[in-house]
Image (cartoon, rainbow, N blue to C red; front, side, top):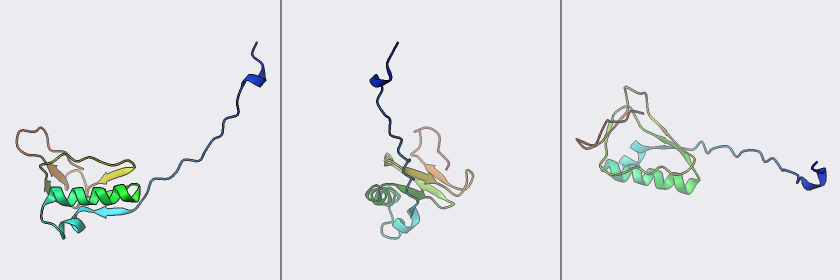
Length: 97
């Protein structure tokens, strides 16, 4: 039989909420016409913020680079039939967000 002295107390910590700051890809497109650069700049800002929401408008975004999403980041589009991230031809299906 195990004695209660051998158990340690466990501290429960409240989960930290995710950041809710919104970063709009189109705001970054105003500074650069290159979609890949705009997405990268927005994701860098999200990473500096400790996370956030990357918002894509209702249109197609042609990308040629890998999108690496930082921790605590949500990608949000305008709807599955309204926002599309288009990959170069032959690279698989085009994700909708």
